[in-house]
Image (cartoon, rainbow, N blue to C red):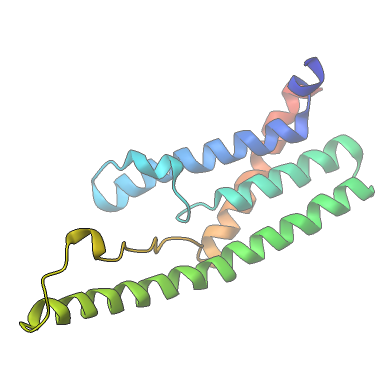
Length: 159
């Protein structure tokens, strides 16, 4: 169990996730003047906790094992893939969700307006898709820098 507590790369990544998720709350408050505590467990937004986690992990592995090791190479490549996915595939999935939600709203409005159809039960209406899935490139970049910073700051506790 002691080995788990002393696993610097693991804790750097977990702390980076927690910090990134927590920071979303005051940033949202600054932008909207409303507290939204559900952001603590949400995807998307500023900064990217995915990017923060993988850069903290790679930085910690590099610090602990060396930047020329296979372990660092593996974590860096996986990190690049995760960051690319956060800004690419997941972002586009969120954009598709916006379009699909609009389409569902329009179809529901059309059905409600047609008097010849039977009234639908509210359970039959489609649920809205989550639209905030991915990240803008700046959110990925800021999350990445945050992860590096967290690993460097946390390093002092694991020496």
